[in-house]
Figure (tube, rainbow, N blue to C red):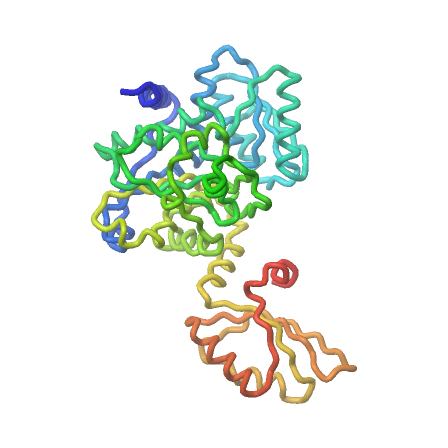
Length: 408
């Protein structure tokens, strides 16, 4: 047995003093849909509802003489570090952006109690990170990276140790979300060539794919933070050293709007609450399709820290992706009966979800922002045909990100 594998097993054994192994549960619904033996590794059921406490545990376990741990995080890593500071009786200072939702700040404080101090600094994470590292250097603490740390990578590999024990063998196919690469690097280092892998990233934060194309870690020009648990601007140097040979063919990028359809399905059909990053591996099954038929497949659901205040946004994005909700700007003739004419174009299953009309008396036409929901995307083709036939001018702005930010 190689040294990494042995150390991961030792880490997993030590963790049992703190929290039980997370469940590996067969999912009948997904198994039937994809014709495979599909299992979910439920990291969303850990004490902090993500796998991040594993790496924090292992790093603190291996540095027993360090009195102060410092990290920068706006989410799961902060909660994992806080939980373990309290467990080990260590002092922790956790830096979070000023813009961090209050719910995440409160949960971090709840897990850490008197063992931690939370400092809100910077509007953007880069500013927060810089402040944390400067403080750590001055205070002589141990900076705990969320992913780019050998002890953290080793700790995250405990997920693989548990899967092997629970399944009785390595899976045929392992589907893993990738953010900074800590979990995927640990899992790959543990299982090696024993299974096939699919590494999944959000389209707005595909830093592994960018690194594979460049041959080195590169900073993304822009990051979409919707799937915040995996939206990382640059993959870690240590993690990429372990992932550099995976090949582009084994990576997938998932549109954030499509991810919303899976979040809702898992909630409504399975009763499983997943954060966007936690749903990545399940959503990837749509692309894997028949390639996993007849195989034993494990999807790691990495987190369930979902703020239900985001649910309306998730529903909105899912409807738009599915093609059953559209927004457009309509030029309405300013004559009596024009609105009635338009309403007559709607089908029996078309529902007006938004309507804003600004009448300007000096003009012959007024602009209307309108949102319509329907049951079948084909209904929009019929509607647009009627509008064209009757000379109504309109612009579909559903997928216009700039306009959507202001009007939707």
